Image (cartoon, rainbow, N blue to C red; front, side, top):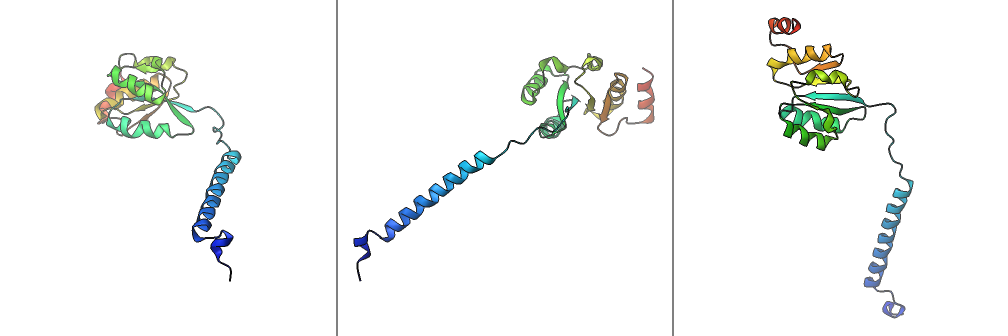
Length: 160
């Protein structure tokens, strides 16, 4: 019986060749996947534009990151009493610096055609006022609950 080493087939040589084959197959597979992969297209139509009012813990840690994953909605405006915080978040989420508002110029959201919906994420005592002002600006409004703490809060806000 001839010696395998004489024919060039050793265990070491076999494992080396098998490893090279697996590496080549893996490389080919990766190239083929890239060649045949299709980019996922954007959903048809325009994304709904949202203004986030109030940049506290809930907005920063839950609402804004969730919007970053949305296919049909995007944040287009921010309202805050802290311009530095708003500027940092605007840069992170692709909001134009021109679309950063404060509580004094909040009503000018009505002039921003990108804003379809206002999302009020303020302390509860401020919900009624900013919800009503948003509706008066002609925008749809989503208010974190409650919209008002008492019926009196709501009626006082509507008399303005």
